[in-house]
Each structure stands twice: as C-alpha cells, then as structure tokens.
Length: 245
Image 1 (cartoon, helix red, strand yellow):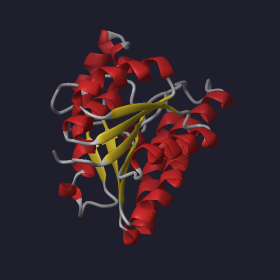
Image 2: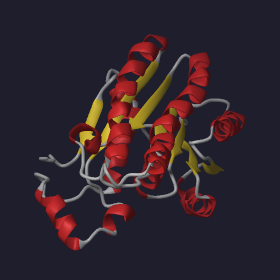
Image 3: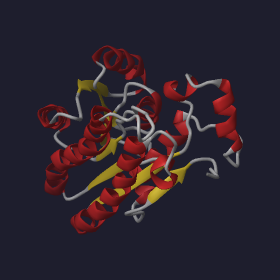
C-alpha cells in the first residue's frame, strides 16, 4: 500500500495510460479522482474500478480554466487535501508542417501544454497550504527526439520538460516534488489503430522489440508518486523500452 490514504488527481483517466494509472494507484491504496473530458466513459470506468478502492469521476476540460478550478474544488470538498497530481491528459492532431492548420496546432497546445500549466497552477496553492505534494507531468519521447507529422505534439511535450525543471526549482524548497515521465510507443487505442506495418516498424526501433503497455507507464507514475522517490526531483524518467530514433 505504497500510496495508502493519499489523494491523487489523474487527468485523462478514462482510457489508456490514465486508466491504467487509476487502477494502479487504487491497488496501492490511493484515493483517486478520475478526471476526464469524456463523461460517459469516465463514469463507466470509475464504476468498474470501485471494487478496487475509493474513486470518483469528475468531468474536466483541461483547456478551460473554470473547469479545472471546479475539479480542484470538488477534490478538496471530498478529501480536504490533494497529495498527487498526474498531468496525463493529452491529444494528438497530426499533420506535416506544410499541411498543419493553425487550429490543429493551437488545439494541441491548449490541451497538452496550457492544460498542464493551468492544472498545476490550480493545485499548487492546496499543496503549499499542506506543505507537501507531488506533481508528475507526462512528456513523451516525441518531445525529446521529435516525430514525423507531430510538430504540435512534439512541441508541447518538449515544453513540458522545461516546465517540469522550472517548477522543480520553484516548488522544491516548498516541499513539492515535481517530475515527468516520457513514455515511448505504448499500446493505446490510438497506436492500435495504426497499420500493422507501421507498428512493426515502431517495434524495430525499440531495443526490447515490443511496445509498452499502459501499465508500464502507470508503474513509473506510481514510483515517482511514492515515498521511495522522495529524493527524485526535476527528473524526466524515460519509459520507452530503449528506443533508438
């Protein structure tokens, strides 16, 4: 029970890595707020996971500050504290540079980058009052190496690394740990829809010759959120099977 009685907000928790993280955190004894834009799927998954522990669904649009503020308010009303924030929510809207529309570029920035900023900004005052907290941001190997057709996505994930290290400097002295996880290619619905040929090519670029599983990334979140990682700070943990770009 590595997270016994700790309260965690996990954005993008209704599917993929976020859903795996909700399950993993419940298994470790945390009380979880599954936050997601998809109300139908979010409520469904929260109901499924109730047998594993205390979990509540809260609908949130991380691109809207008012929605984020309501998320934080609801969490504090339920639990009187917030120990962990997992900034996991993210989207893709791919196109090559010359074909990408301004709307595509901006929407990904609004969710993947501004969303992380506003969620963290809303949660930190609660953590400061407590004198402790743990923030984990989700970057990507695309933010480190770049990826074809992902100008917008790669830009947001690279920026998250910079924000993580900046917040580590600002918030560390106040008792708040800040780290990031950079997942590699992972077996999410988005990846599984790709042509088999592309998936095999992706595997060929990974030293372990397999895609990651959502639980692989969830385990990294769990480690960084636990007391075992209390002296890990300002770090970007790559969970990518040894990717070779």
